[in-house]
Each structure stands twice: as structure tokens, then as C-alpha cells.
Length: 169
Image (cartoon, rainbow, N blue to C red):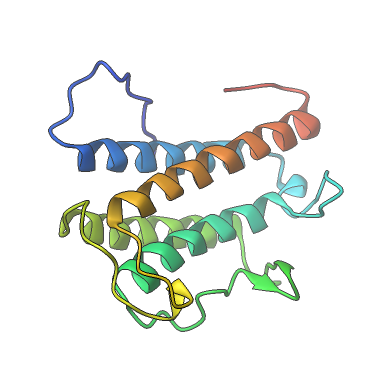
């Protein structure tokens, strides 16, 4: 999964490629940050809000599912809110870093297939995801996903620094 951050001056064949590069990069950084944490920190919260690094990983996988598979493509994904219980992120007892990273990689493949097979200007399928509003375009959804990953990776940077004393990108 490792990806290098690409400079905005490196040519891309399309805006779609730019979005795909950013998503690949953010997923890669997420995996690297989590794999660098001591095992005991993965299920520990260091913040008043109470979330753990593994819960964050599961949340980001579900964010992609909700926006791209359930929302944009209109697919039945079972429980699109499976990362939450009682208003907060939730992690099952048997869920592990390896298993959750495998789920993220599988989600990345499904997301890529959706993104590559549609034009950025296409709206999503009407459905429950939109709460009665007009479906968002693929481009708008991708902007949201980039923002979501960037924000949460910043959160994880802080948690990692608190856990290890090391600061990073």
C-alpha cells in the first residue's frame, strides 16, 4: 500500500487521476501510521472524545463505503453505518489491524472501480443516502473523501505523537 506524495507539478492525465492519487496516498499514510504505533496504542484512546486508532481506521473504510458504494453507486451494502454504535465509533472484539487494513484495501479496489467507470460530473443514484436531497456528483463526493482523510490523518498525527513522542508528517 505505500505511496509517495506527489507534487502538484507532476502531470496527471485527468482530474480523476488526481483524486485517485490522493486517496491512495492517504490510505497508504493511514496504514503506515497505524503500523508504526505500539500494539497497545491501537485500542487505546488518548483523547477526551474517546476514539481509538483502530476505530478511526474502520470509520474511514466505512466512509468510502457510504459515499461511493451506497451513495453514489446505490448498492446495497448491508449496514452502511457499521462503524458506529450508540452514536460513536465502534470496534468489534475480534477486529484487528491486519483485518481492518485488508478491508480497507478491498474497499480501495471497489472505490477505484467505481471512480474509474464514471465521469466526475455524474450524480449519484437517488436513494436513502441523500435524505431526500439531490444526489451529489462524483467529483463533490471525492472532494469530501479527500477532506475526510486529510482531517483524520491530522488527528492520527496528534495521537501518534502523544503515544510515541515522535512527530511526523
